[in-house]
Length: 259
Ligand SMILES: [Zn+2]
Ligand SMILES: [Zn+2]
Image (cartoon, rainbow, N blue to C red; front, top):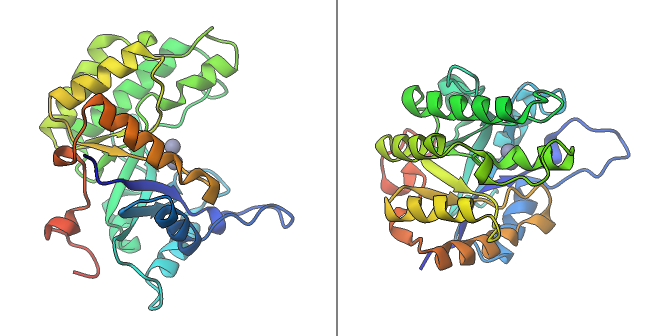
């Protein structure tokens, strides 16, 4: 059994947006939606990258909401989804983590055909960023949606069908080995039983006792129930609570603000 938990829930209320745009959910609103969706542990976050619409200031506002005295922090944690750089550093860094009082950092690669038009170059770039992060960066706790942005190449008509068959098996193997060695979780952020190579990769992670986490990647309250669907799918693949990633504070070994 897996204790349903979701550490990848965006509180997009603090983003810079047009005056008439949907304001997006606050941390409290996403926490309520995540609890209603059946999650035990909840992680609220936002992007930490160089995009104009979520400068670091947005994260400071999100952190201020989380640490406000009336916010119910029980079983609820604060994180960021930080973009990974080519050298394996992350945009948040240890200083950003301390400044925001974060419990965890998800390190993700966000690329698209607009940034890298060639799909093989995209795959290699994502692989190298994840690999270098695993080898050198102890600030990152979870690798967010590995190769999860590849579907954009299908959408753009660059590949007829996106799937893990396009990722060289040696890349997947090395990422799994390094993630296990350095106890970094790999995120299950998509359930796609039709992608046989992806399913085999996940089953290998399960067999090799890699840490995993399950993320809805919800950007609105409507996205939160996805965690339940993905958790049931992960269970059907053989994942169990034993290797389910948890914030260090739950194990009493955190440098967190509240400890
Ligand atoms: Zn992402
Ligand atoms: Zn995300």
